[in-house]
Image (cartoon, rainbow, N blue to C red; front, top):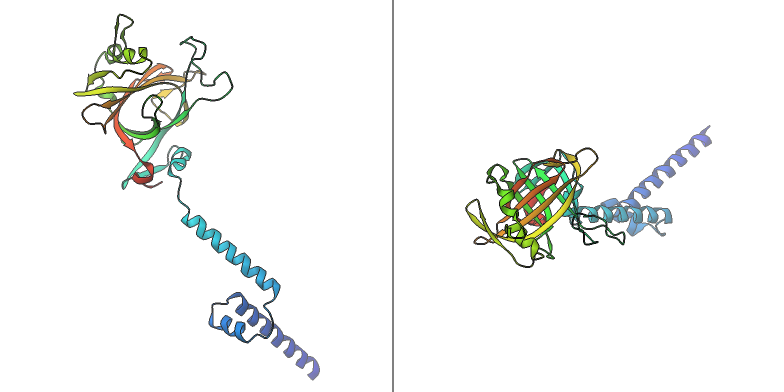
Length: 273
């Protein structure tokens, strides 16, 4: 019985010693770990080295994930209706989300506008997000053939002058309005016009179908048919930081809308998403 007790005591001592050494190996920066590292006569066991390596790799991955720059534009596009966006310390809720599907014609027939080119490639698509407070964050070119940019607009639809659509179109070809003259020049000759006590210069015209991603935007499908809009982008002649976007609804449910705003840099102006 004394021998068995002695063996059990030796076994318990060996187990405790093993766990003590293992804890030291696994915590090399601790006081005990430094003592074990200095006075242990042999090499650190391979399985301990493997665990330490796995721990280091996991810590490095966590650090990389924590310090990786956030792709704010991607986050904007992936956010869904009901989420919040914080711009310069003020929170806005996503009310609705749309995708503008750019349209062009390829057979000489302007009434045959399509989003997919004859070679099968899709034309450009732009994100548009309606925010609480009557604002819209949208991606679009700065002008015909120009670079893409983000714009933050305020809704001025309630101030659209009576007959504005007819004024912009005019009576082509004899008496075209500003938008019609700009289109007739293949968007090469900017045209000035007055609205809301400002002088604007036409910069771009984009035809687009509206793909609704969530919420109830100002342009919606009518049955199985997508809403279609023609967008006129103009720049303030006297305050070039200010832009106007007129969305003329051509089919689907909703209303024509008028927006005034400025270019928007998500990387600078978004605090949190």
